[in-house]
Every structure is written in C-alpha cells, then in structure tokens.
Image 1 (cartoon, rainbow, N blue to C red):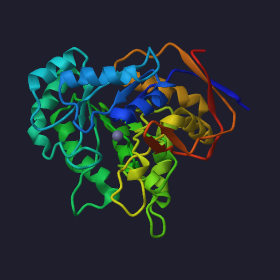
Image 2 (cartoon, rainbow, N blue to C red):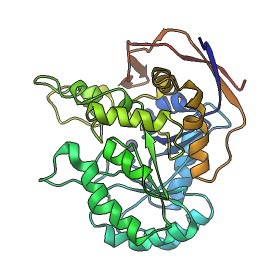
Image 3 (cartoon, rainbow, N blue to C red):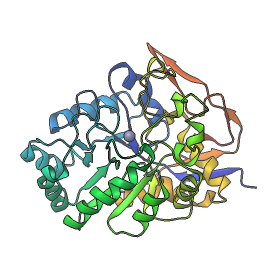
Length: 348
Ligand SMILES: [Zn+2]
C-alpha cells in the first residue's frame, strides 16, 4: 500500500483571507502548503481598484510567514468600476482576473452585480486581455429554491455570458452540482474549482432534524449524494477542467451559533490538502492528486507549474477543533476528526 505521496507544491485557486486580526491569524494556514492562492476580494470594503489590490496582496504576503508565497487578487466586479484602472491593472498583472458576485449571494456581496448586461464592457476587456472571469454561480430569486440556485444561474446567466463572449475564459467557482459538472465538461473555455466540503458533505449534514449545523453551512450549500459523487469523479478522474479551490472561508464562532442569522462559510485551510488526499484515496485515485492540486490550475491561468514538491505520509492525526489566536476563535472543518494523511515535508 502507498504510504507516501510526493506532489508538486499545490496552489489554492479560491481562498478567503478576510482582513484585520482574522487575516493575521489565518493566512499562514493556506501558506503552509500552497505556493499561490487566489485571495477573494469580498472584504468588508471590496477590492475594486489597483491600489487596493496592491495593498491587499502585500498585507496577505506579509502575514503568510512564507517568503515565497504569492497572493493573487481578482477585481471585485461592481456596476461602476473605473475601467481605465481595471484594464491597466489586468495588463500589469495586478489583477489576475475579475470575480463576479451576483448581488447578495454570499458574504459581503451586497456591492455585487444585479444585472450582468450592465458590465458587458468589463467582460469585453477581460476577453481582450485574455484574463479570467471567476464566478460565484448562483441566481437568487424568491421563486428559486436554495438548492437550485446554481442550475438557474447556469441556464439563465452563464449561458448568456458565454454566448455573448465566446472567447472569455471562465472559472465556475466551487461547483456544487452534477448539473454544473456536466455543464463544464461539455463546454469550452470554462473550468471549475471543487472544494473538499462539497465532496464530503450532503445536505443531511447541514439540515438536521430541526436545526442547521452552522459549521457545515456555506454558499453554495452542499447538495445531494449524486452531486457529491459527480464532483468526486470530476476531481479524481484526471479531467483537466477541474482544479483545487478550497473556498476556505472563516467566520468567528460568534457568527456560528444555531438559531441565528448565520454567516455562510467553512474554514478548511488547516487540513485542506490532507482532506483532498483522503478523498482521492477513497476514489482509488491518489496518482491523480497532483494533476488536480498542482497542474490543472496553473495551466488554465497560464502560469508556471510550481517546481518544489511536498510529501504527504499516511499517518493518522486529529484535526484540532478550533483555531484560537489573538481575539479570534474559528471552528476547523473536520475539527476533532481523524485524517489519515499528513504533510510531513515541504520542498522535498
Ligand atoms: Zn468563496
């Protein structure tokens, strides 16, 4: 049996580093094993211009405790961006691309876009500069069930974007349904990130008898068994259109008590690559972990593949229940549970 895996150093193409004390505490967890992370721009004041992006990148890298670590910043799209600054920032690689949050789909998305036609000039610039549009693909409407938001977004918004901008590169972030997986597989210029939690949880783990588990509540919400199986297959079977994006998204414990207005998000950075290894082993696909974690992402983003490697060993360990530091207390995903893979060497 395989007791060791050595893979090229991974990158995480979807992380929330937040700000202030939270950022200072959590950044090192993603930087411990990843060479690069896309830092989502939905901070309290969203990152919408080049100066903010430069500052945010510096702040994250300073707190990473890893001098080689790179934070990559997408622009938070609004309906009134400064397009000259946006274009220049893309040309100068200050923005890796741009992130579309439909209004009110998740944390700090109230500044997002309510009518995609209003930002067609932004899509045009992205397409011309060959930069990526990252999408939180959910459509919110009082008549749309929370479990169907991804499907409606694909049918009613994404298809329109793709038909209008046929050369625009798109990442459908945190794909959560079989419908989303199938859509990505059968269309060109589109890829998807897959989180560990969407491959480990179904809605039964969130919506218990008469109470919601706040630590499994995220956007998009986890779905059914057949969705989970489709996501596992997409990640583990060497399909180059899918890559690692944890959507590690911490909230303090005070926002995670049952029976309150919950903040959605799961913090998995303390054990992310180990969880992916566990899933890939369960799918008899450990030999495909490197492709998913370290190769497909940079290829899609036209970036170099990392040269150094990490080694995971088959060792049981218990994920600590919480991260507690400074004034911050966060529940770890998989906290108090056993994982059978552990990173033991960096830069092998
Ligand atoms: Zn996210």
